[in-house]
Length: 319
Ligand code: PMP
Image (tube, rainbow, N blue to C red; front, top):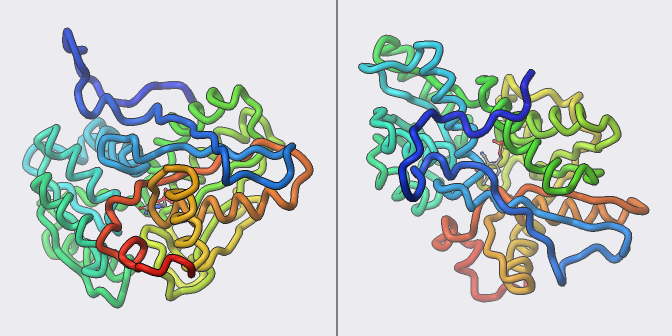
C-alpha cells in the first residue's frame, strides 16, 4: 500500500492562496514547557488537530470517505451523503459538502454541544437529532432506519465500518508523525471513538518500526462526559476497530479528562477539548511507567466547541 500520498483532493492550484480542503492535514506537532513528564528521558508531543479547517481530526477521515465514495461511484449527483456523528465528523462532512456542493444529512445525538449543532448547520447540512439518552449508538440506530426507509436517495458513509476512515490516517497522520519525530517516536497515544485515528496511524507507524507501542485511551465508564469517545465494552463496537492492534488500553475518568484539558489551557496556553485532556492524562500516566521514550499524543479538537458545556462553564476548576 502506498503510504505517502498527499491529501486526496484533486484541485488545480490557484495562482495565490489555497482551497480550504487543501488545508486538511499537515498539522503542527506541539512541544510543552510545563506539563511534562517527571522523567527527563521521556518527552511528550501533541498533534494539533484543530488546525484542520473544520476544527478537528475528523476532517481527514471525512475527506477520504467522500473522495473514495466518489471514485467508486457510490456518491454521485442525486445522492445525499448521510451518516451518524457525535459532532466532529458531521462538521467535517458539512464543511466538505459545502465546498464541493454535495448534499449532507447528519444524525446526531441531541445531547451534543450547541456549538457543534450550530457549526454543522452553518455549513448547510440537514440535521436530525437522535435520543439524547442513547448517545452515539442511538444516532447509529436512527441513521440505519432512515437509510432503510429510502435507500436510493442516500450514500450511507458509515464511518464506523468504512475502511476509508482508518486509511485517511494511514496515508496522512501516520507519515506526518513519523516525519515530525524524525522516526524517533516510541509510543503513540490516541483516544477511541470510531477508532479510525488509532487504527490507521498505528498500522502505518508499526510498519515503519514494529517496536512502536500503540496505546488506546477510552472513558472508564459507560456513562461518561468525554464527547466523541466510546466506552467499547458497552457500545456498538465499530467494525473497523481491531483491539489486537493495541498494545494497551488506558482508562480515563471524565474528571481527569476535564482537569487535564483545563491544565493544558492555563499552564501551556493551548485551548483543547475534553478528549485531548483524556489523551494527555493517559500520556502522562504512561510516561511514569517507561524509562525513556518519545510519546506522541493526538489532540483531536480545540476547546471552543465546548464553551457552553461544563468543561469551561464551571467556575470552580479545582475539581
Ligand atoms: N475526540 C473527539 C473530540 C472526536 O470527535 C473523536 C471522533 N469521534 C475522537 C476523539 C476519536 O477519533 P476516532 O473516531 O478517529 O477514533
